[in-house]
Image (cartoon, rainbow, N blue to C red):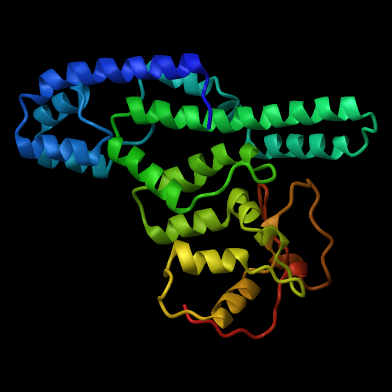
Length: 291
């Protein structure tokens, strides 16, 4: 991913200044305290060294494991984050706009106009991807809750999505903010469920296309192979197929109006933002799956 050169320069300067100042304070720490800092944080600096010295290793680690709410960022850094489009506009709005731009392209017949419109749409999507990366770097650099930032990165990597697919760039900021970050220091079960219900994951691994009679196994296979059990853990192709059937109807719907449902299924519809469980698309047949 490419960044604005001016941003890269300012961030590099901030890192350099922090490291230089931190090296003086780090010299006052014991070898074990310095090792703890470098393991739990993105690298010892002046503020983390001073906080550890003030609290002691045990209390400092307790604060990292159970940080207070909010980002606790310097005001000027928080202002930069608040000014980002992904901070100001909800994901649903960004996705609906990107989808509308994509549909409008189909009606443009002039090749030059179509190319210009395509470039404009891609630039808007790229900007949202860069904003997500910028916000993450700012938090990594300036947040005192360094363990939370490390674990957010770890789980973001574990439950990764490819932002260049479809319109995921319009979703990825919300994915990191609402699916990964709140559960980075919490229960794995909650994290797994949050990623399962997020449109970015459902789009990336094609479960939005998974329906009764038109089974798509991509997400079911990924859940067992990479997200949970792992290769060689004993699950079979039959297990993948059965889990895919369990996940039929779990998808995305950006339309404000709900789907038309067959009689008797209205009470089973679930819609939260872009997430939707559509009972019309669910396979209600008998299934046997080892969990």
